[in-house]
Picture 1: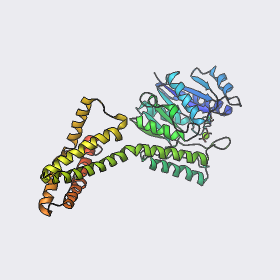
Picture 2: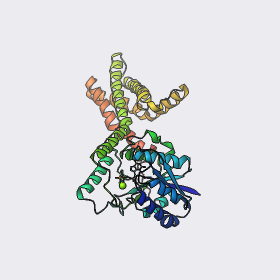
Picture 3: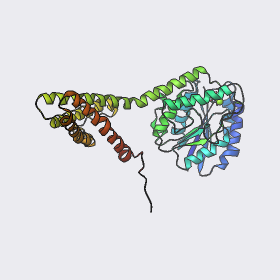
Picture 4: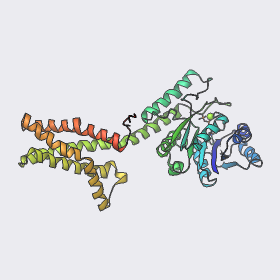
Length: 382
Ligand SMILES: Nc1nc2c(ncn2[C@@H]2O[C@H](COP(=O)(O)OP(=O)(O)O)[C@@H](O)[C@H]2O)c(=O)[nH]1
Ligand SMILES: [Mg+2]
């Protein structure tokens, strides 16, 4: 049977934890069929005796576990708990949940249901239909939460997920959590690590779903979230956003240098007496070669191809995908020259026109329709 482990950090939550164990084991877990539910409490030797409370309850619940360690901050509590759940308890999925009832226990079942229906990553979301933030929250608190989320969504260019800072999330171990170097997440001593963890999980997950969460107000004293935490969280989001776009930015720069090679090559070959058609053809190929080299050693340096036979195969494929440019550019440039005259300016204009009006739109359509299939061609039925 599948095993789902709830990882629940608790610091000075003796009362809450006792209630939580009761609610989960007597009310919520029995409602969930087809999975073995476990609860792992991560306690940093809380002075209020949270650990002892859990240890006592463990006598009655064989699926209740405790991990005790020194205090290092919220992120580390989750990371150590997740590692324990994966390696010691052999979890198939891990659910992150707080002990203070801000994640009401009744939302555990819908999260597990989403997983049973095939989700790799289920996100308890406050900003979708059916989800909410506490009505007790002051307007300013609501605004900070809402706009903070919007800011992070914008920076990460992720508008599919509506709640990027929620702490209630279920992730499949195989292929999602076990692919992440948890100890290297940013800002593990504070709240901000949550954004990095979410970002990594989203990357690994093939099927992500949002499940409505009615986020509750904290029962006891005030939350530890403050301006410092918020700035740290935004910083993590910005770093991730830039990293994410790095490859795209590099790809653009390489494309620019390719154009320079293309134009200079054309001009040099012309001066050696080549026809405009031949000069454009050879210069285009030179640009393709330089683009291939720079993309290989810079844009995709994490995947750099070094094996000679692989280089040939990939170079051939790269040429094939640029074949259209190789064919079309010489025609456009030599055509323009015969109409407007054989000057450098005409050749530059023709090359720019070929690139921006023909080659790039063509590549864009081909990539979207045929290679990555983001556009669906409508089928007409009779
Ligand atoms: N083990 C452990 N648990 C912690 C630590 N900090 C917070 N927690 C627990 O993590 C959960 C979330 O903490 P909370 O202060 O409510 O954070 P907030 O809801 O994001 O403001 C609660 O169950 C806390 O008891 C920590 O340093 N160690
Ligand atoms: Mg809380």
